[in-house]
Each structure stands twice: as structure tokens, then as C-alpha cells.
Image (cartoon, rainbow, N blue to C red; front, side):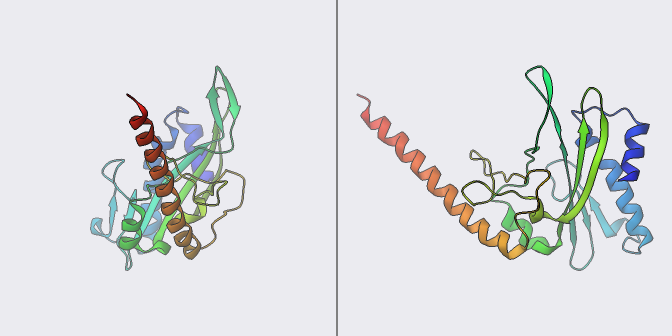
Length: 203
């Protein structure tokens, strides 16, 4: 975190793009640490994501391979002409239909998120915390006790900034994952049935 604070103080970051701009710095420091630890000996030992759609952001070619994703959240948001404090950044945490493929490739215990929590507004630019943990510890739960997700595309959503992880283990995530897929499917079917009924009512 001290490293990131130095970077923030030394460069002119924009609150809109800080989350993506900081990724190259995180990648550089991780590669340096892995080289020092002997995990990276050549360019064949790791892969840096070529674009934002590639998963993961950094892959370490160990056995088994290690997937590292960068996430970030701003505790300040500009709404209706003023800055307000928020409790969740509503990041894209991966879609329901793609998580089984990711886990099949890397194993659920080998996918880690590095989550940078920061506070950027018109007066402050500060890195609040940096957390490293298995991906499932950053995912939120909805009021319906399923994984928090966006209805239209099944994108999972994070937990609130200051609460303890509601999901403690991979097994718990996998059980909730199945429950969430079924829950969302039922909601979609019900919505489509309602649309069809309304269509048949029209003359």
C-alpha cells in the first residue's frame, strides 16, 4: 500500500480512470516480487492480459497455475452535481456462465483478487487499503441469500467495502453458485411468462 501511495502522490491520476491506470503498476511490482522469489525465471513463466476482456490480468505459470485479477473501488462517487460517500463500487466480478470455466482451468483455490480501495474526489486522492484474497471473499450476498448479481447479464457484484467476507470458503461459494443460477433462471422464466401473457391479451 505504501508503494501505491507513492505512485498516487507522484502522478496525476484521474478518479475516472485510476482503477485501470493503476493495473500496470500492480503488474510491474508483482512480476518483480515473483522474479525475486524465483517463481519467474523467463517470459514463459507468466502471461499479462493483452486486453481488458482477457482472464486473468496476470497468470503465473506455476503448477497448478495461479490467476490474479485486479479490482478497485472508489468510496467517493459524483452524483447529481456533488460528491457522496458510497459503500460499494459495484464492480464486475465475472459472469455466472463463465465462472465454471475459470474454476475448471485454474481451480477455485488458485484464483486471487487484489482489491485496491481508494478515495478520489475533487479534494482528496488517497489509497485506503489493498487486500489480497481468494476471489470468493470479495463477492457479495443479496437480500435473497444468493450471490449478488446484476439481473440483465448475470455479472456478480462485490460485497460492501467495510463488511467481513460473507463467503468464507470455496465450498460455500460453489453451493451458493448453484442456488444463484437456479434462482436467476426462475426469475427470468417468470418474467418471460408474464411478457407472453401480456402479448396474448393484445387484440
